[in-house]
Image (cartoon, rainbow, N blue to C red):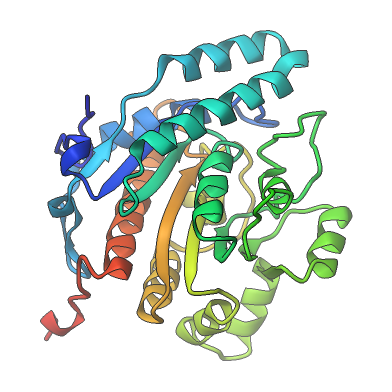
Length: 322
């Protein structure tokens, strides 16, 4: 069964993009509620105009939103009730996620995960890194490095996702973190010591802008660190918190929506191929008039569209503008 997303319900057999919602936020360390992100994004997506002036109609390719497996919600509830068992439940989440991801993959589809906290894409990264023989590079948009070995005793914490991916049997080739601005000394040391890690802190991006470099030029510096095949790990708190006030760990600074879109667009124009992506940490807040879900679903639509352009399934429509 397929859920409706962007106004359409597409069976898996007819879809070139498959999205897996994972409503898990038991490792959240500040504000909870990211488990409600997938539903908030789905509901908000009902009102989007599916024609995008940059790449056309991504829904024409078929976007399948898998139903939420009830075990995710059961695990999340039980983990929150017994906090000492969160590591055990995290393992269960990863195992179930990997099983579902493999069931969605036909070898050609673009795969995406909708969180949930930032621990949830671990299995998708594992799956795609293995499938590419470790040639996968991660474009990581986030306010945080997520390079902690563990956080609050949780080994599969939202603050540890990038550290954990580097420990995989077949790890990604590289990680390029963009807009990071809240991290500990241990994370900075690891980022400087590990040759697989590249980073552009928020302060570095601002320094480049203030020295007179335009955003497209800065994007090219970021893109040069990426291999041919990439995965986008998108924590919504990588954006200016005015765009995502409900997110679990908001931090001042961050990218504008347009900067985010230009970075991904320029990455695709460079010839990089997007193999998959995640969108995490979207958290609806009371009386926000669906703002968090609205911004989240628009980021998701851009991820679907630009990933499709990178595969050659859609084309950039820049020439249509006078």
